[in-house]
Image 1 (cartoon, rainbow, N blue to C red):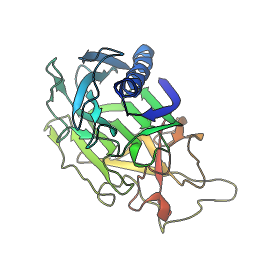
Image 2 (image 1 turned 45 degrees about the vertical axis):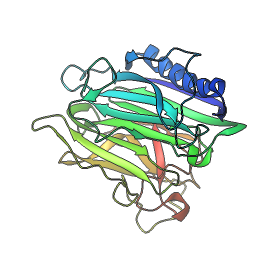
Image 3 (image 1 turned 90 degrees about the vertical axis):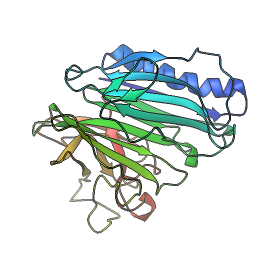
Image 4 (image 1 turned 30 degrees about the horizontal axis):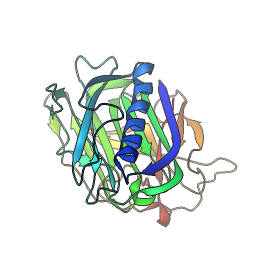
Length: 296
């Protein structure tokens, strides 16, 4: 179980600043690789090199979840690095699947299409922005450049689990930011067991919601205890996700860590994201829950 953090600027106004944030992202993935539960497969990127593109991808890197189920239900993750509609707009694309061809093409039971998980806005300031990467058996998550407005992003993929919280080969769920405002998200569930299937990707906040906060509370207090909200997947069984949960921004500020037993009886540690990470059917500005991910 491994985590990585950074608190650095996000600039994309030259070849050098483009390489800076791209190489930082890959370096932090390297920390997770060293931890043992993420493995690197292939890349065409050379650190400190590569011209800043315009509205295209300049390079990619492929990894896989290095857990006990890799042999029977592999999960590959491909990250692509480039820029959006302007060369000053940093762009990170991702896709997931159950195979890779060694040249950056993901296949098998896979995400519908390569998709970016951060907003399409320019980045030309030196303001430090925190980022969080986390990988455990059956889970990978990143919350990138929190506070950079629409330029920040988030992505996770989480395997299914049994009633004790132990990972299973049944399937997985991916969730990502996919636009310039907090109401645009994407979610897709996958079934790896027979019969394998990639369920229809949902791309609106309402249909992509992972959890529900009854009656849109502004407080979850019960006595002196605050509450968190269970997130769910469907493969086709409706089942809880062990790697993420929903919290209210007013109660769990960005970077707050806490412990809770989301599935089974084992307590695990989670970290709260920024207010741009909604996981409920309404945005966090409307008292909806935001993302907190496994942090171990």
